[in-house]
Length: 122
Length: 122
Image 1 (cartoon, each protein chain N blue to C red):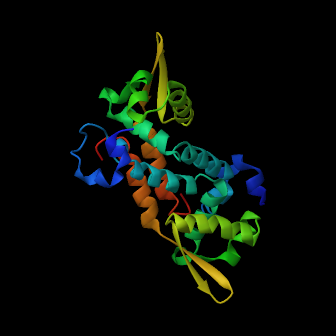
Image 2 (cartoon, helix red, strand yellow):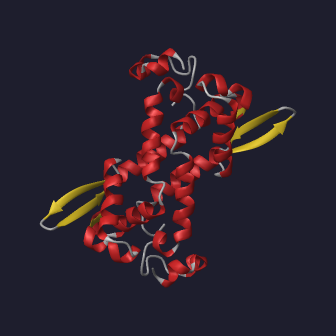
Image 3 (tube, rainbow over the protein chains, first blue to last red):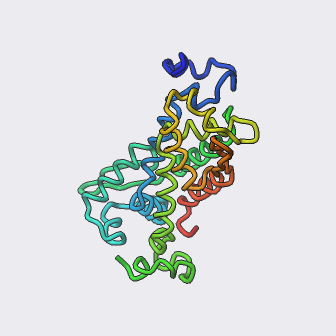
């Protein structure tokens, strides 16, 4: 492990690609990216996310998410909590129901970071 | 579970968004996407991938991947096998060494599919 890896807060101070690509200089970046990828590494969560996106305004009540997937409300709640913690949706309580709203910019940002993996200095 | 979910080979025959978004009509798609996301849900694999990208021509010998990350060759081999199985790199044996080559189009495709999650008909 390099000195830089032991001190991820130095990420922005190093010259690009000298001597190592960003992910090696900044392990915190790869940990954050991996965490968000993991949130999307489950088929049910991907289905829930697109199901929310399919609702008007990209906003859906938890009560509308159980039947299409044939899963229980606690299961939906668990998956949506993980998606919210990784920033892909926001959560809002209204009375007895929880509503979820898509954050399209989170998917766009993740896609950009994936593309950046092709470029070792990004 | 709907009839369509039980028969994913019908994916392309359904009218768009009638009655459900693609991921619900085609569970095989979300399973495939989740599998590829999982391959990238590990910080070490992300670091290895960008390390390969940093080598000339996006091609690196396994012998060049161990020292920068401080991991053993069997560990690198394990992670690179998962990346290869999900299409992010190709593997080529030359004498005693294995060489890995980036497949940038795999990351671009994944980024596009992520963006598509914002659009329930894509």
